[in-house]
Length: 219
Image 1 (spheres, one colour):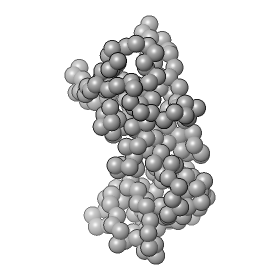
Image 2 (cartoon, one colour; image 1 turned 135 degrees about the vertical axis):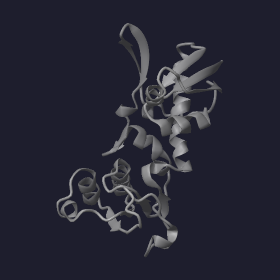
Image 3 (cartoon, one colour; image 1 turned 30 degrees about the vertical axis):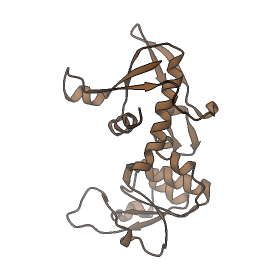
Image 4 (cartoon, one colour; image 1 turned 90 degrees about the vertical axis):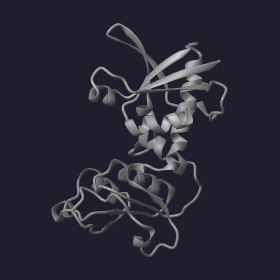
């Protein structure tokens, strides 16, 4: 049977008071989905303030260090790709996506080059947190200047990438079309897992605005 999913973003609910911004669409529980259920995140039942809710535990999904939850979903297209082409990315020098890409590149034996605005000398001398992890994972950090002192590197052109004849470019926060593959998989998992409850309408609260929009593309 078809199932109507209504996606509500809690952050949006807070920002617009009592109004809810939501989207609806009809999907089929018979749509194609990866058959390997062992790689699915579980759907758990909990009771909160007397109301029964189901929680999709993407936090339990781990491909490797720093590659879990939404980062696993966003990077699924690279996880499933057999290419060993170098990965080039850009963004803040303490980015969670940077750390996840560094980890994935190390697992796959790929070169990882990351571009950021200049890092403060003290943090380069004694790196901490994500920067320390990524450097230890083999990331090559390249620093470039931008006029106007933006908070972080928002863009990077292929011409600015030196000494690499070919590479796979990943923008900041992995916010590009290829990341839809993981969101597509998440949507299909939800459809199939919810079938056993025989709901006709399901409200799904998402904690991420960008994740919600990508999910809706494929539902």
